[in-house]
Amino acid sequence: MNKKVIIGTEIIKNATGKIPTPFYLYDEAAIRENVRSFLAAFSWTPEFREFFAVKANPNPYLLKILREEGLGADCSSLPELILAQKAGIFGEKIVFTSNNTPIDEYAAAIAAGALINFDDVTHVDYVLQKIGKLPNFVSFRYNPGDARAGGNAIIGKPSEAKYGCTREQIFAAIKKCTSCGVQRFGLHTMVASNEMNMEWFIETARMMFELALDVFDNCGVKVELVNFGGGVGIPYRPEQSRLNLEQLGQEIKSIYNSLIAGSQLHPLKLAMECGRVILGPYGYLITQVLHHKKTYKDYVGVDACMAALMRPGLYGAYHHITVMGKENSPLTSTYDVVGSLCENNDKFAIDRSLPEVEIGDYLIIHDAGAHGHSMGFNYNGKLRPAEYIVRQDGTIAKIRREETIADYFATLDFDNL
Ligand SMILES: *Cc1c(COP(=O)(O)O)cnc(C)c1O
Image (cartoon, rainbow, N blue to C red; front, side):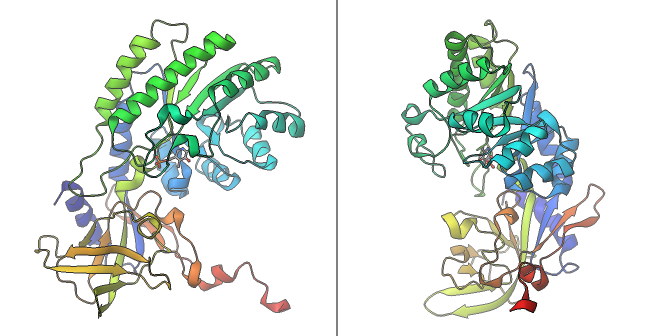
């Protein structure tokens, strides 16, 4: 068993039994420690920003913790922008990385003083026409297309992804923005998701430094900020180990030193907008076993379902599961761990080796801190669970209540039926 699992289990034992299942539980001390080591890996930079991808976990209590640790926010919608502001994140600590964006969202993000990260060059004219002016600081999202042909499991081939602009489009758009008075520029890319190969990020950094230099040659513009996006993976499986961020930072440093340090672009601010690696390992979904069913397979039915954690059902993602109190028991049984949705892919695990499970056992579903609760939905009238946090002093606080049937009905007007 890996270390992470043991730490998680100790914390969860204190909460379970006192809180109705299913529920999410986050570990504040571990989150803070992780953010500090993440930032330390890039402390050599002239200036480094991590804009936490709010979609990964939009709970404002967690965003506030991240803000206290120095992070900004990467928002893609108006509600995400509002959540960031509620958590005390303002102005250039927010990057607005949307796509196919409606004008009211641009207007709100510009009014908030956020860094606008354009997904497409036509959006420059769209904003000019509808709002009348551009913000003074804009960024463009780069899609390298077949230059990064390898592709990444979740995000796919860049040339088939809907995001971002080509090199030539970026050059033209920056010239256009300059002629409209824009003075400050950033460049952004996001070409990976849950990627564990360090080489991928090193090459992304090189690609972006080269792009910034090309922008200088083509447009005479000194880019101020280069954002490598998110996508750093986490070890969902116990046999995997985490991506060595310290080493990644040092590898990027040596590329910075060879390409940028001696150029006109120095000092260049660097940024990332990771979600998963910031919170993923520090959130757990706790669920209790309701039923044990044996037909052609052996099913363990739990009181959470895919509506609370969609990743396994959506893309067959692995989430490690431990049985509370049986952490060291031999894995003698093989189960499908299932929820109650009328969808056969509502399975947290398929053919999973576990200790023998009994009705009433608590299962801990690991690495649910990012893209977990936030991907929840209400299909089949399923209600999303509450979220709790273990504070640094060991106390447990509720940071989002469970949904109720009244919430589910809130958009309906039964009186005028
Ligand atoms: C989803 C997303 C991220 C965060 O991805 P992680 O895998 O959670 O790091 C960052 N930036 C953009 C634009 C995204 O769409």
